[in-house]
Image (tube, rainbow, N blue to C red; front, side, top):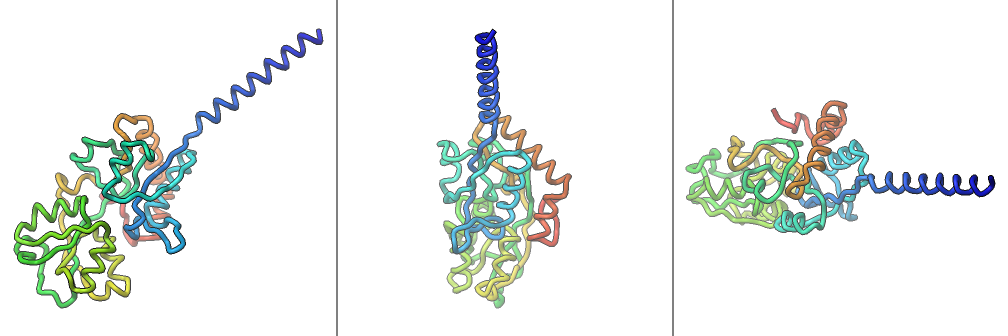
Length: 260
């Protein structure tokens, strides 16, 4: 009888250990990359902490998915290759959903959509955002972005100067080394609110071209990771429905960054 009880206890203990192990194995653990140089969407503070709209959205999505997430920084130019190499599981770095990128990675549904704009010095003679308006001008833009692709294709009578980060073209614009810059209107507006940005003004906004600017900004993951895509999409829908998205949105913007 004693032996039977010992066997039963051992079996129960083994079953419990298996159950705990399985639960632990099912915990979703993710490493999410961002640039950390694109305020107000993602930025590194002087003490090395990540902050911004996308950082808050990432944390909200992870909480909704009950996932343990680590946010890391990655240079923009190497973002997709690093994802493909398995250095992290997803990208939340204001990466627009475009046909070209879809050949390399998969995307969730969008989590924001805002228009591009042209910014220039206050004393500029640039009157608008057309090819003719910017003919002969040097336009700064962050390289390997949809804004860079648009500028190269549209402003063929201008000099397009790529920069590794938004802060670098902003510095050159403030110091008079370029005539104008092209970026997301939110990034431009944030720049104008800084002491350096007092030099400049928004000349106008650009109507997004879906073939170039894409369908909005989504989370990028490796090809074929459908289950992860579904989890992210469900979480995006949930924070839109439960008010968490609006709470974060209103912390940064006076309008709905999700777009229409």
